[in-house]
Image (cartoon, rainbow, N blue to C red; front, side, top):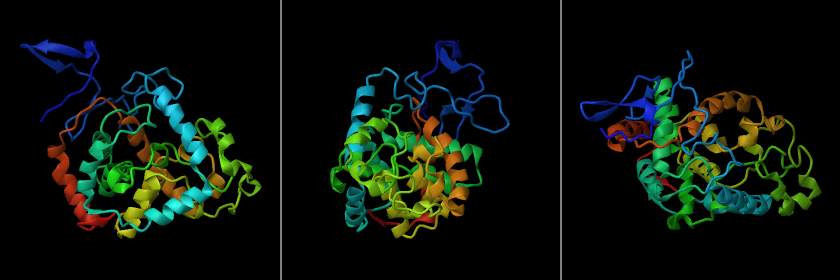
Length: 316
């Protein structure tokens, strides 16, 4: 098993000419990588900085990716409108692009890098396996959650030519509801001033076109990889529980699970599923580190989960 991980110099010692990690509170995961762990009875705890040395989701930190990230959100906030999302859901809901297995899609995702993410510049397959293996360590009996960690970002294949090569702003980044007021907690909120929906009075109240407690499944969300993968899983009749589909669909909905916005639109099922999303989000966000995973080591386990919860081939 090959393990490559950046460590501070003071955590490394020399033994017979070889470098080894000194005794820290690191958590060694089944995929062959080390995850920071503090003393706690609650399992994995998130580190405070990402692999670039900044706080996670720090959109103000000076970095070479920062200008790219802000320009991404400017374009996203201008172009994601209610009518645009309705068109995209109709087009991609046909699932007529390609047929392939879940694992084939995981491998295809190696060609994708997410411009909206200030924490991640590695191929997406690395992040998927980091997330899944971290969850597996702390929740060994929840195999559906392990698989959810693996597949949650597969919708990012929308960036590839086979799927129409959509622009980044139409695939990745934080998601938010359309058809009601844009909450102030949404990152780079100022750019919504140039969104056509901002001029529609029907969309500019707290509830907008929705009823309080209507349930998030009845709310139109900005289009991207979350909603697309949700459609793929649902229409291909996955046997994953509803909590898994909720995680897939809303894991980028940071205004909800980070700022507590839009809770007035949730129903009782959403409230229960949000508990699992909050658990998942810790691993999704903080497993982004300079780590290489031995894919072949963990592949058999995840193939078995795919066979349990999905058909051999899916329509995409």
